[in-house]
Image (tube, rainbow, N blue to C red; front, side):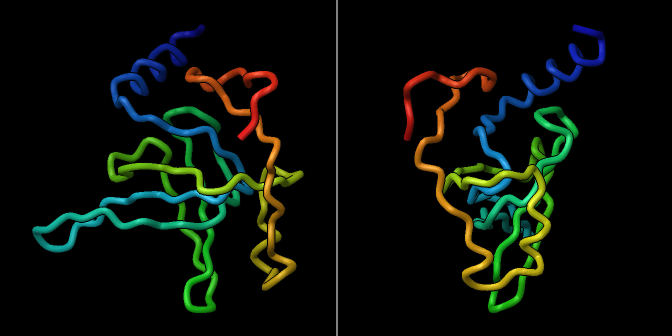
Length: 135
């Protein structure tokens, strides 16, 4: 492992965040800390993850898209942001691409993503799938 990868791994370990295994096509619920004046609260943002950038690294980010009052809304979250309280995978999607930007031009039934019922759950290290188990 080179020096930069070691430093990055140390930074990720020091943050102590538990990032679940998710990819484009999965429906995720992101608990985001919102500060209004002196008060702070956690606001859930639930939608389809349409892209992941920079992988699992410290600079990683993901884009979540949802339909709010008939209008498409996208939000980019840094993966290791201190403002993210939690990331929860609600539903696994079966897709064949890494970036789902084509969903921006789709509405209704054509924008649906099939659920992946045979998804292999990853172990704690987040690298190798467990053989024979599914959720």
